[in-house]
Amino acid sequence: MDAFIHAAEFAATQHGMIAVHHLHLLGIDDEERKRLLAAGALRREWHGAYRVVGAPTSWKGELLGACWAGGTRALASHRSAAAVRSWPGAEQGIQEVLCPRWRRGRHKTLIVHESKLIDDVDMTIIDGIPCTSAERTLIDLGAVCSRNVVERALEAALRDEVTTVDEVQAALTRLARRGRNGAGILRSILDEYDADRKLTDTDREKMMLQAFRRHGIPDPVPQYVVRHNGRFIARVDAALPQWKLAFEYESYLWHTGKSALVRDNRRRNQLLAVGWPTIGVTAADLRSGGSLVCNQILAVIRRAS
Image 1 (cartoon, rainbow, N blue to C red):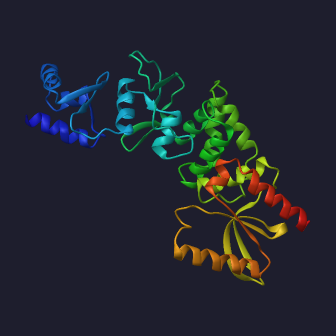
Image 2: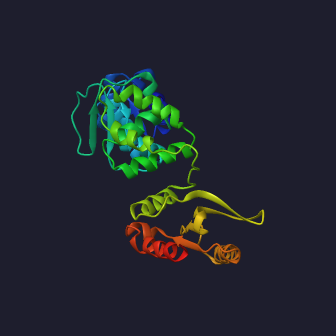
Image 3: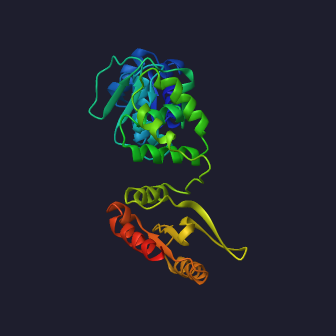
């Protein structure tokens, strides 16, 4: 009983999961494991991976169990690795795993990518889950996600300061010549990347700029500081300085309520007073593709020109 208590305590640090080799280290042999399974104290989730009954279920626990089932070099990858990092392209409803060889049974939510191109530098651990490195994840996302999603993930990685453009380029050079799927999309993004451009503050701001690009609006300057006669007026999410046009992504979280209304109205008035009209973009605009707001922006640009 003491050994099982230790097992439960250990599982609590591993998203409710425990592997066979952990049980052995805790003094629970195969016969005792079978008794615990029969008594309902353990539940088999994956080959060699168990959930302690009573522990809360979570997508991270399912993902960790899938990695254990894949062997010592199995890693959460692609959309699952993005989910662990809270990046665009994340998918919590599946277990996407990269490993040299999968010999176990398949599950309906499991996606396995078999590859011998797994070097030590491609491996890391996040929240107890073995994952592909930031650079490898960005390359692999190109095989399962659109170019826009990969571009947003790259921006998130740079924003989180978990990698640099040079490190991503080095990983791309190392893996692309070995025929890695997804490399082409990431290469095309890096070919157009402007190292001098400021990063957006949030993923929604990046989506806003992508919508502008799709509709033929010139690339705005992210995080632009508006000054008038040398005096600071405001920092806006993006701007087209040549037309003195500012853009703000208006999230429901930060732009709702009386204090937010007063703050945003005062800020817009300050910008307008120095000749800088501000156009707001919402999540609803982005969900609809951004056609309406982008057409309004283009009309303002035409009048200004």
